[in-house]
Length: 116
Image 1 (cartoon, rainbow, N blue to C red):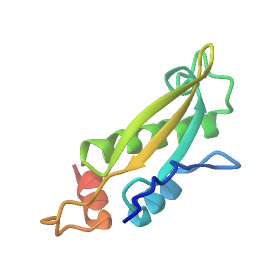
Image 2: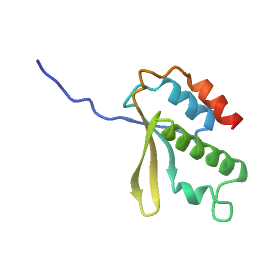
Image 3: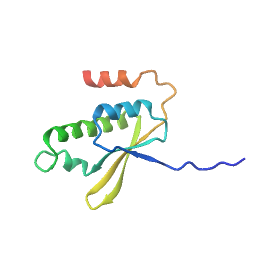
Image 4: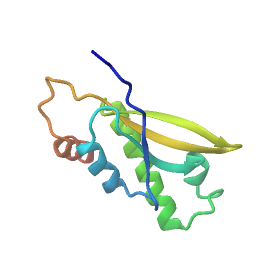
């Protein structure tokens, strides 16, 4: 019996992702799926006094970063960084296996988080 290895493939968006698109990916991702949700230096790219991004894009990126952290806290993804260059990183979410006992959907978790 041959047990081959599956290469890790990271999906990289061709344009900046929104928080909603990230949530949609989390909802449909299978364990091991990888999504690069930002490329740059996230903390600097979201800081108003330093960021070179337009305000609307910077605000959306801050929401995306917060949602990615929230998804990691919920056990839905692992968050990793890959150094691309000096002060430049690829921010990657890796889908985790869903707990067998989990009964709440991602939608329910999102609604609970918004109510809090």
